[in-house]
Structure formats: C-alpha cells, structure tokens
Length: 336
Image (cartoon, rainbow, N blue to C red; front, side, top):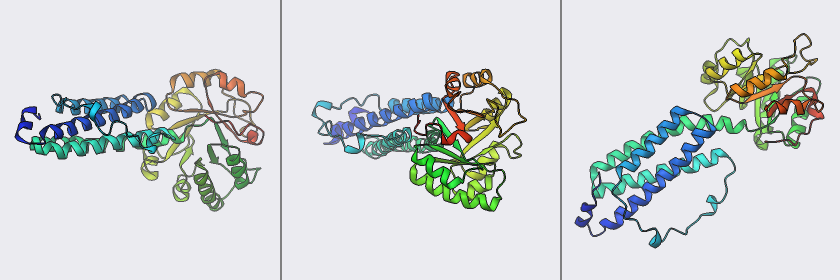
C-alpha cells in the first residue's frame, strides 16, 4: 500500500500522489467501459468477472490516495477531437483498454518514487490486462463484423463478382461466396477478388464450405454445413482467432452444439420452400422463433425468403436473414 505519509519525505510527494490518483481513475474508468462491453455485448460471465476483479484490484491498491483536486487540474477541460467520435464497438474497446494500460504504466512508474514495491504490483496488473485484451479483442471483432441484418449469398445463376459489386453498392454488410458447381480453382480466383472488394467497402466476406479457400483468399471467415469433418475449434486453429465461423443447422440440438463448440453464428433453414433445396422440408417460423429465444449467438434465417414473407421472419424476433435468389429484388439498403 502506498502511504500518504511518505509524501512528506519528498518536496513533490503531493503532486506525485495526484498523478497516481488521476491515473487510478483513468484505469478504472476505462475498465468499466470494457466491462460493460464484455457483460452486455459478448455476454461472457467469466471475462466479465475477470475485468471486474482487475478493476477492484487497482482500486484497492490506492484506496488512501484521494488527494487529487479536479477543480485545479489543468487537464480537466482538455478534450481531444479523437475522443468525440467512435465508429464501432471495437473502437470503444480499443480506446478504453489502451487508456487503462497507459494509466497503469504511469502508476507503475510514479509509485516507485513513493513505494518501490508497488511498481511491481502495478506491472503485474498491467500484464494481466494485456492477456485480457487478447481474450476480448477477437470475439468482439468477430461480433462487430456480424452486425448486419441482410446477408447476401451469391447465386450460381448470377456472375458472382457482379453480384458482389451490386450488393456493396446497395449497402449490404455481409456477403457469402457460394457455388456448388464451380471448381475450387475458379472459386479461389473469385474469392481473392471479392476479398479485396469487400475489404475496401468495409463489408464482411464469408466463403461457403472451403476452409482452405477462406484462408488463402483473405476472407473474413467460412460457413460450413453439418457434414463438415473438422470441428469448430480445429477450424479456428487453422483460420485464426480473427476469423468468423458460421454453421448450418436444422434443429435446436444442432444449434446448441454449434454454439457450445464456439461458432460465431448459425444459419437456420430452409425456413420456406426453395428450389435451391427442393427435397428438403421447410423448417418453418415456429422453430426459427425458438432458435432466436434460446441461442445467444446470431441466428440467420435462410431459405425461400423474399419480399412476400420477410415481415413474418422479422416477427419471429430474427433480425438477420440471408437471401440468394431474392438478392436482386430485396431492399439492399437494409442495415442494422
């Protein structure tokens, strides 16, 4: 514990305590913002508890350092233009985790002047925060990329590059390359081009089925079916923590398994009859509603969805829907 009595040994002791106190406040404020993201956006109890515990540890380390005078602080009215706007939740996370880390570094250095052993304590806390940053960043990145409602899947009857171009122009935020008839060589060529197009537009790009093509092309992720032999964790190891993994499901059991395995979203369908899968019985809106109520990761409805039935899909509580044939006619300007 840093004791205020130590200040009398140094002419600037009081000022040093104010520096430490100001940065304790910065650190815990930054972590409080991070905690809310982990709690309410990621809904991860374990990570929430870890952030909360770290915040409490920082507070405990300086409980008696309450000598700061905010009224006379020359920096109280400073407000940099970069603080005025955030584009995504990821921006908020990055700004606040860095704020906390920088504050901890300041505390670590200045506390050495008052109580050298405290420097080591705050260094340890800072490195704990670096580890937490890695655990939070990638799940939040993937969730940010899944902030959409209209999900366009390429139609084999429509040239994919042109389809992607029009989807991007219409404001679509996520696009999947799917063509069961094209060769892998052709798919890879398309995927590389589409990856560049979507990156420039700030859209998310998913490759259907082929994990290797998703990896080589620079896609944002892959969507696999129930017949995929690799587990979600193995796919994650191959693609990396920053990549999205979607899984097709036809019932609640499969959806629960995909969520537990670490999938980022599930695609549920076909909801209605569709010529894409003429022999598959539609799952219907009741099951879709049950999925949305129970499954915490994003649920994407697919199969026969068009202008005539979209309202019914949305009424189930499912805000994300995928289209293939109807991509040309549905309002591409829909976004979350």
